[in-house]
Amino acid sequence: MQTALERLRALEPCTEEDGQQRPFFLHLNDPAQDALQAFRKQCREWEGDASGLMKSHIGKLPGMAVRVATVLALLDYASGGDAVSGIDAAHLGRACHYVGEHMRNHAQRAYGVASMPPEVRAASRIGEIIKAEGLRQISTRDIQRRDLVGMQSAKEIGPAFAVLQDAGWIAPIQQSGPGRPSKSYAVNPHLEGSK
Image 1: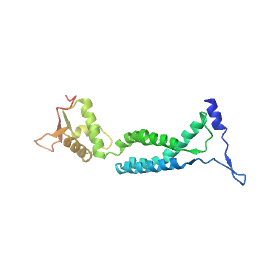
Image 2: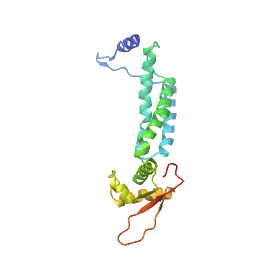
Image 3: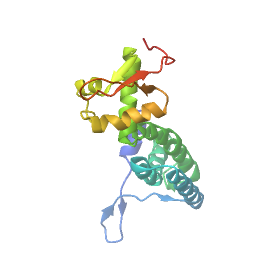
Image 4: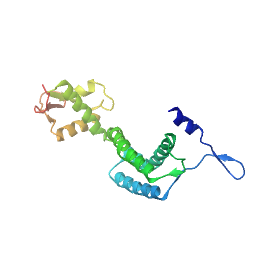
């Protein structure tokens, strides 16, 4: 590790003809440029299936791959490789695999919840409550009493219950009597863990 760090520390900046120093530029060789172009096309395909934050993230992947390829080229040099003169297709291929598969899948998990419509997010949260507590019945008031963010009013809770009803998790209970009835739902008894 010490030798690797010393090799990196010893890298010199470039000196221009006028004597000014600048960072050393690492360019992609022709095969690496071809690999980057192929990765850009792949990213455009992924963007077609994405939306919101995830679509924006995918648009940044080619630039991220170039930065990761630069790090990989320097790590190869630090571990005893030849002097760094540019980024080749092997560096870029490894970077594209890491960024396109590993990092994109992690981002999908992170942004997937954030990109859900609010009623689906709310339905998911209510579903978690039903499962965790083994509920056999649930009402709008039950959810309001919990003071959950985005689920304080019947107007916010109603669409979430509609999602759960469409999914077969709950069914409305017909109520009669004086006053305004609370919207109550029976939980599907076939859900595992319901009491």
